[in-house]
Length: 311
Ligand code: CP
Ligand code: NVA
Image (cartoon, rainbow, N blue to C red; front, side, top):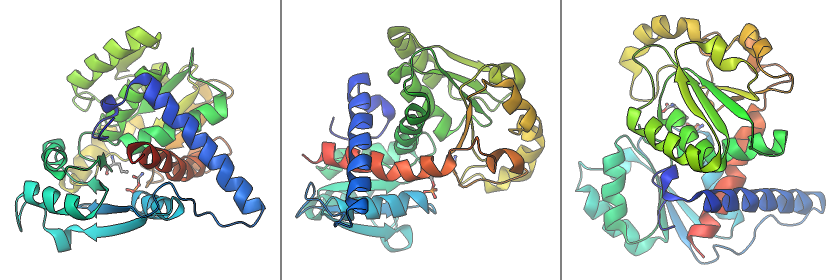
């Protein structure tokens, strides 16, 4: 593995290996906290990691910056107002220059093609911290959280209700690789890319998982072990928010959908969440929600990723 631009850049075994490493790092951190020891290790000692954001972020920026610190490295957070990606100079020049200073580049941007251009020029590992197409770091934390709750993936189902967006794409690929069945319930015209669904189905055929899409959220929720949702209008789609709110209204994650899921089903959301839109307040604020474990696991999963990419 050289970059993580898509979940499809890792094999199923590599994905499970990252989750194992993330669990180990989480346990080690908890033990150090209990012993009141320093949380700073040495996996990235003497290394620097650029964190470049073209869109807002709370979890990704904070978890990567703290993660690099805890691995003994130096994080360089940068905002697009300073970098002007693709405007101040070419994306290739930005990648090549940054690659002369740092040992990895973590970037949140719009187009997957821009990410690929940066990675091709950088000469150091590049990590997708969210594009319009994928959010692979989120999927790592999501699977880590699912496995903590349910103990494994085989024979289990995660249902994602809402927009067939970046988060849905990465979940489809990650679930299929890990052997976790994924059902996507979306409004007509807002499903995941057919090419991603086809690739996930191909991968799922090798792991015994099932990948399905539907426009019926109730049917998709039946017996599921996790119900997951995300905002209806992603960053960059603000002008579509009103139309999407109308189209997505029947896809709110409600107590009724949760009662159709398995008795031990949990509620997941990548956050930020909008209570009363994609998820009812009583669902996200219930004891079934694992949203803060999910957010915390971004830290452990990304530390595992960086420690693996920068051996
Ligand atoms: N889930 C997630 O990526 O959150 P941020 O947009 O706050 O980084
Ligand atoms: N789909 C959302 C995820 C935010 C973490 C977005 O792209 O805005």
